[in-house]
Amino acid sequence: METHETDKQAPAWGEKDLKHFEQRLLDERKRALAQMGQFQDQVGTNQEDAAGELSSWRLHMADLGSETFEREQTFLMASREGRLLWHIDEALRRLYQSPEKFGRCEECGKTIAYERLDAIPYVVRCVDCKQSWEGGQLL
Image (cartoon, rainbow, N blue to C red; front, top):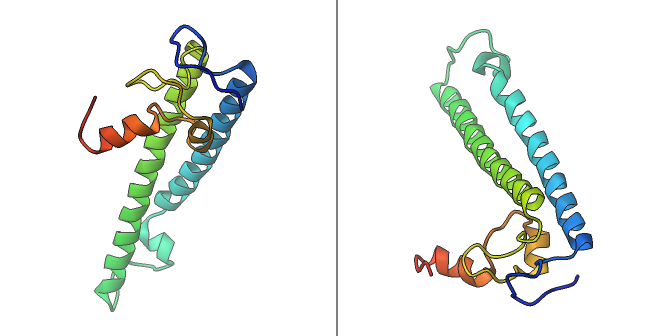
């Protein structure tokens, strides 16, 4: 867990740390792809097959509404996983194209804390810039 000064010429992380972050990203990508596959399996079946019914006509229309709601929730979760996968792929692209810049905040250029990158390896902002960004006070 080595850290470096915020000198923009020096790499943010050493080779060992970059390998660690690469593995973390690849693990996250594998998990996200598996989750997307599960969503695909859930969405791939029509409502009648999923419910085991012969027709969509029910005695209780609330059942149909509940199933529709669950399918919409599945679509929302799949969309979130798709965005996560995009962020992971972008982080891998940054890591491979310019490893000396990986782990630097895109706002201020400081090194992102190891603990933050280890927890969320696709982040692009340090904690301070992220808090400012979320608060609507872009630097």
